[in-house]
Amino acid sequence: MSFKKNEIVDFDIVIIGSGPVGIAFASAFSNSKIKIAIIDKMPKRIISNPKVDGREIALTHNSVSFLKKIGVWKNIPKKFISEIKEARVLDGISNYFLNFKHFEIQKECLGYLIPNYLIKKYLFKKIEKISNVNLITGVECSSIKTDEKKFSTIQLSNGKKVTTSMVVAADSRFSKTRKAMGISAFVHDFSKNMIVCRMEHEKSHKNIAYEYFRYQQTQALLPYKNNQSSIVTTASKNETSNLMKLSEKEFNYHMQNNFNYSFGKMKLKGKRYCYPMVTTYSKSFISSRFALIGDAAVGMHPVTAHGFNLNLQGIEILTNEIKLALKNKEDIGSQKILRRYQIKLHKVAIPLYLATNGIVSLYTNNFFPAKVARQVILRMVNLIKPVKKTFLHALK
Image (tube, rainbow, N blue to C red; front, side, top):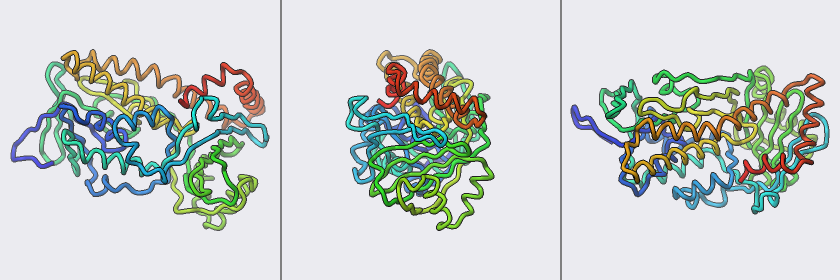
């Protein structure tokens, strides 16, 4: 989008960040009269053609329903989507596992696995076709001035200005916009890194996802197409640094050995990617004419694979509140609307965030009492139906 000299452009909603969360939120207002801008410092050529980042996203049925609702899911070729039929959780060196099966939620599968960069790609293809969404790229948000009774004014790094009824930040768990608005966050640094990569293996995964809580590291195997899986290894920074330095042959052998040759010979496909393990929970999701969505609001640990699913749930909550406000002819940027969003998102997010961090803390604790507790909990969840149903509910 280009600006005329000294022009100040007005929007209903301005989204900071063109990641999958920001674009999905904008897509929820297609075929509406809501005028939206997405601002991102990256150039359009990079946003439109996202690079492989090694991450695979496990989507729940609710998330897929939302992607269908905004018209994105139908455009993603089925050849890129893998079904997860079953999930197993193992602890230490024990062969006992907690298992979740698709028929327990009365669905054809527990969920779907799709590469993160493809979600970005097809969301962008959708946004390009939406006439009421404007993409402003290659610029940053320098400052935001809010007037609770009127509008917010955003100063851009190129000297231009935009005004809006509501600013929505979707610029990662380390959100600069959140900080600029004076909102702090609870930060939990696990002092670990996560290595993600795609590997090919001899034996079939049978569409079963695995989570191995070992005593030195945590490993997940997420089933993809053609006897390939996404491997996620979480370990100390020193250990992950050493794993990244291994030759491809050494890395293959290490992974085969780690999985006790359960999947036969394993071969790295593509690159290895390393990410720090830091979770965040914003102390407020809102401010004056301002809301946080996605990781900018809650940045989850990947162990339960619910980060992006929670992000989409948050988007849906905010979208519904805005649409209700429009129906009732209310100001979409008012504190009344924003407070309703905050209350509903907090109610959904805080139990999941605390439970996930608690699971990680327990299942990475190697003291003997913790090891005993870990085994007891696995058996309790497997055997006590109401407890297991609580876990299964999150997969719907």
